[in-house]
Length: 187
Image 1 (cartoon, rainbow, N blue to C red):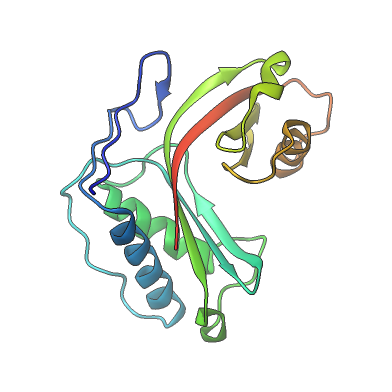
Image 2 (cartoon, helix red, strand yellow):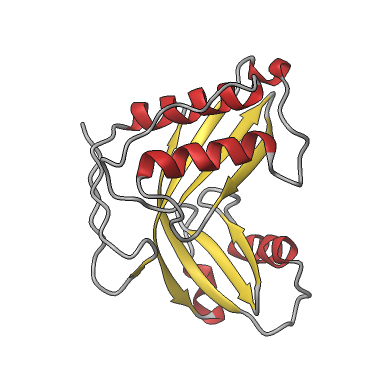
């Protein structure tokens, strides 16, 4: 089945337009995996076309039970979903400053998660406990942003602690919180 998503009222759509994609989960995962392989092997990225609506994307790479890289954006930077996936996958493979660039040995049995950002809605600290594991969390303090993607932990208070740490902001600082809603595909 082809994935199509339209955002409901009340949510701020990050990409600026209602996303409607003609890509299956398997196709998105295959594109991300192929891009990671090519990046690691220093080959040209896959050819993409502007045949779909862009959306913000995060790519997470895992191997041997640990995260090897994760990169993405909250606002579109490319002209199509395909190009967003390729950009994020290349960056996750070789440009995540928290991890070393992937090596050819890392390509054995690696997995990717494609997270397509749908919306962010303001979240008060009193509503924090309403976050479900399917929701991500965005913490913003000035120019600093901490993002906890969907299914990164279950406990909302722990996820808030991670968001403070990712943003490099001290607990107790003035922050704005947002619920991040996304589609997530693993393979």
